[in-house]
Amino acid sequence: MSDQTLDVVLLVSRARGLARAGELGSALRLLREAETTELGSHRDVLDLRARVHAQRGETAEAAECWRRVLARHPEDPAAGAGLARLGRTGPVAALGRHRARTALAAAACLTAVAAGVLTTLDGPRPARADTDRAAGGRPSPGASGTADAGQDKDQAAALAHDLRAPGLRVTVHGDTVEVAFARGLFSEGAQLTPAGARHLALLGERLGGRHLDVTVHGHAATVPGAPRSGGSVVALWRALVAARELSAASGAPLTAFTTDTADQRDAPYRDPARNRTVTLVISPG
Image 1 (cartoon, helix red, strand yellow):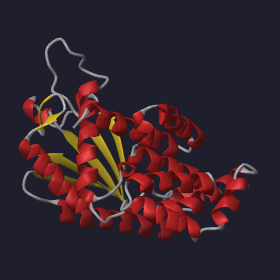
Image 2 (cartoon, helix red, strand yellow):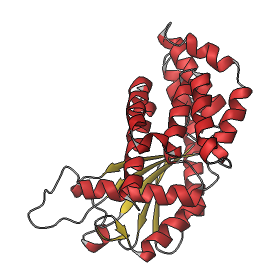
Image 3 (cartoon, rainbow, N blue to C red):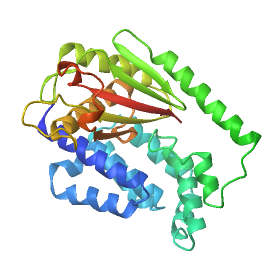
Image 4 (cartoon, rainbow, N blue to C red):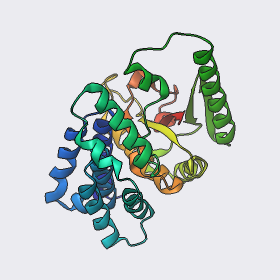
């Protein structure tokens, strides 16, 4: 993977994190700053810019970003689907103009846009039902909440069953699934081993076509003289490389993955070589 590709992955991951936290203006500023460099014209950067504009109700700006993608990549499915969806979603812009009136209106706008535009494009997922309800007050606990929790756990168990394969350690934790790899994926730095690349490709194929929230945690072996906590740049780069491979194999955009560096104390194994790896935490959408 080239340095430029890693820069794209890092930029998209940072901007997507801001967008998912509701900081749409900050995400857009970060993406616009790349306009003066080659990164600004990369399809993944433009795709995320389009999604953020759409979520803000700025349909003209979103359409322009997707047209720029299609000008260089005429067969790009996300850009084509985005333009088609915008053409069928007139109310989005109206909602965007009113999103600042009240906190409730803003929450409704974000939910409507996410459901109407971003979900279709496998972008950031809309808020879970319990988060949506929290905007208007938490519901009283009861049978409905218990049923929802049980359904989430059933979905996680089904996902874990589908993901299990030789070389993967798949564990269910409530309504999430954790995936670890039996052997280290990287030889040194952020260089994938051939076996590591195959394992990521296999996992990516199994993730394809699903609506999931995926966080990729990079790990690094602890070496003498290095910090023993606080994460590391090497671990972050490994998460970025893994996200790129998973994106390519699954067909999901980079915006579908969140990346970070795990703390050294959270390493999955005692063996340093096996800790040259990543782990995934996946929540069914």
